[in-house]
Length: 197
Image (cartoon, rainbow, N blue to C red; front, side, top):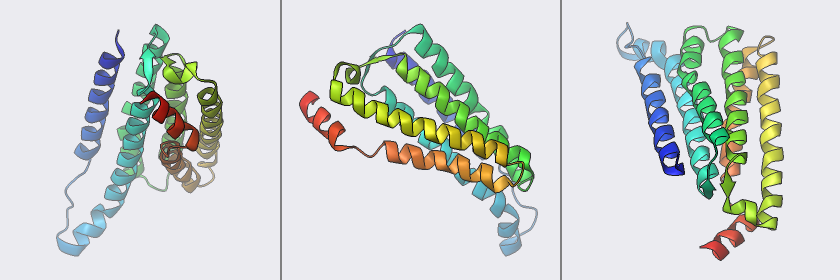
């Protein structure tokens, strides 16, 4: 399988997941301001989950941008990541219907951890131009340490969600922060891009 085919399939799954998110939104029973108040929690959950899915999509693109060869393991772990991504609409629906219940908060934080693990292993099992450059390998080790820190945060948040759902919500949204931080180009990355480009 080519990297291009993997990316096309992945983009298609992400697009379907984003569509499923909006299909779960229900028209409010009340009109005017009361209707807005009624639907506000569901819209907030939709926006947060949309942001999480978008961050995973954007990070997947960045992770595979310099990949030159993929393996069977890459494909399998990419599929596993997509499996966890497809559960996010279910997590969002659970949260929207029962926002103070720990189940949805725990599920979304745990799901984010499993998505990150799968994506990291998928990327590590592929060959990239980064793998041939010593400075970039060191840079990647630093990024991986940060990713594992956020994975542990999500796992901890999933467990602590049973004490208060806000721990789960906070951990899941911390995932978005991770992906935004990871996409900020470092000096090492900029030098590498300049040499390669």
